[in-house]
Image 1 (cartoon, one colour):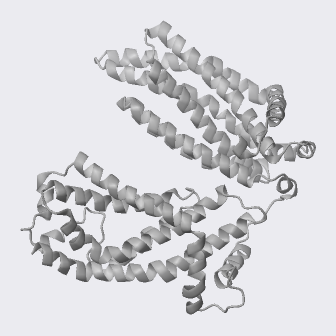
Image 2: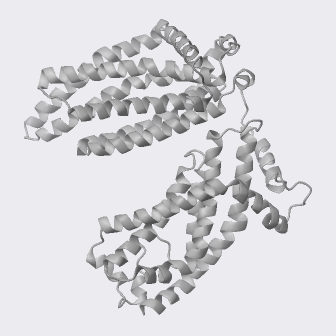
Image 3: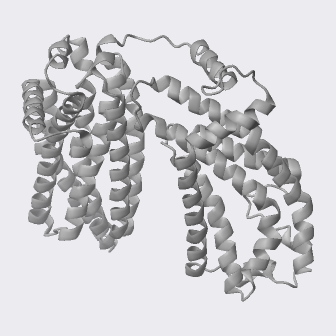
Length: 485
């Protein structure tokens, strides 16, 4: 863990803190009793449910349903105990602050990273031990009652999946606990962890019933990425001085909005120059592009990846012949206009502009809560559709470059740069919480990135999207008619 600035002497300190936290948790009967009851009785309850399901479906000869329920219940048995990790993790910092036991801990020689990791480890261990014990009891009981035993690989997948779910929940709860001002506020904010994890469990249940167990590895990989991002966010936001000085904050938008206006009009780096369009295009945008150069490079790579992914999917899942008639050179242009898939706007300048502007704006605003994932997904989706149709045209035996020049390039040379630049600026907004900078306030960094995004949206993306919409509605059909007759 050298990348965290930890040496060999840090591990005994982290383990000592984790041991102290575990002892405190084990002395609290409100935590131990529910975990013990779940560990002992919940696996037997699921075993009884499995037997009842088997007996019920056996009347109709649908034994495969019961066999698919066994892995699903195995996943449920492993998931329920780790929900208690939320209780322990939410209490880790803000609970000690309310009990007035946080000051001596923060006065210890432990560094911020050691404090964070010690609390994180303590919040993780007890629910994980209970979860693995429940899985073992359920597997043994299921084998004794029905003779069914899950395949070793599936059992390993469930164990790893349970561990990754616990990582995500604890990492998110520790972030909430270190930033909340009261236990009540932390418990209310915990819904932002519970609801997404419930959706993950529902998605995994579908995978279990369809028996596509290889897909579980992709779920594990996604959970690991989210856990790493949340841990990175926790390390970035954790500060012992802020824990002691943070008080209950009133809901007041006037302060942040005023600061956002100041950063929009008087951007750092252009002091002394009055706000004007000339200054925005000559100075502000140059500074913004300098700050987002890494995000811009990453967004370009994502766009290229989406394009290639679309081509791959086209060759893997070719469209039916009746759909491909739209791309035949003998097809009239009027029939090509019908090709909107039910999701594309009408071939009108206003409709196309509003559609593109709305998608870029909404995906950018969701960047903060998705850590930049939503703008990247929009880029992948749009370029993926282009790549998909290029692949389908190539499957027909037509020249994909002609299709590209006829249907994409006339307006794409304006629309794609607008989307890529806006997505890169939004990606920077999502990266702020997981990329700390010494000496700079998190709120100011977020507001500055939001002000930069507004400038890019208004002074770069909006004009480009207007030009692209006009060309797509009026000139692209003429160019397509020129090539396709």
